[in-house]
Image (cartoon, rainbow, N blue to C red; front, top):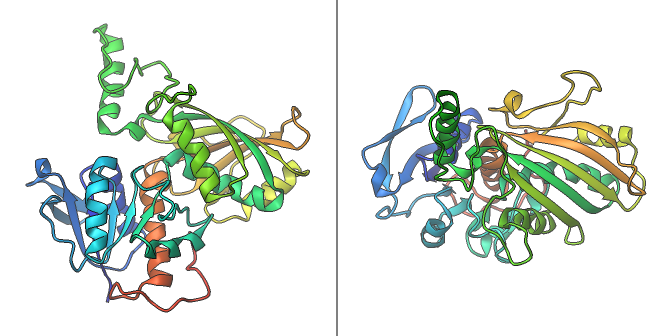
Length: 354
């Protein structure tokens, strides 16, 4: 007997990837329900190669009997419907920013802090971190275990899919406009994105940082260690799928390049592609559709006493969102829920991650 799963925001980029990830990872579902706003009623979404699901209206849906909700509808929508689903008895795994910094909601990357999932009992909600945070903390965790991290300086190169389908269309349309000499007018991003980069993701904050940069700092501390200092500069780049990050790490003690490579290679969810030669590193175009976090360009940072630099790449729609949510569901059902969606007796080990 499997679980009854609802996917909220099923017609969006992340929602479609959630459905695909459930199929690929063979999550034990007896029933899957696709939910979206009333604008999507009458549409269908794919579930695997052969099945399609009719999209149902989120506003009028009764969550009674649903075991798990995978949610990616936008923060304002989640603020209304996540508590309603939790009250009906479901566990909500939410991909929006609404619940991440709530002290009663665990913020989880299964490779990094699976033990935090138990905190779902407080509100019935588990938060999925920001896409750029997820891939960074996966790469940082084995290094932090090997030599305590003091400070991280990161510059991101984030694809337009992180801003939604409209931003992807904008990149496509602007690129075409450049070649046919049509005028370019930004509509969903703040400046031209075709053949350009934009150092501005989310709103500006009083200190001059953007909210995306703030998210990376506070989420890293909540997930990994409250004492880690993080300085982020987040940049939107003309790439459709895949985020890249240039990460500089300062440690409390020495950690050699080879020790770092060994720790990263041994850690679940990471692939080290680090050859000091042409093509000896990962890029977003090569890893789109993959679930791993790729680490390249590992080298000493001579500007601090104990420093390393590295290049981190991942598919933001998959590991940065959908796959991470399904992995949380796997640990949740493997350790905390039985096949009827009820709290299960605690087991001493967490289900294996891949």
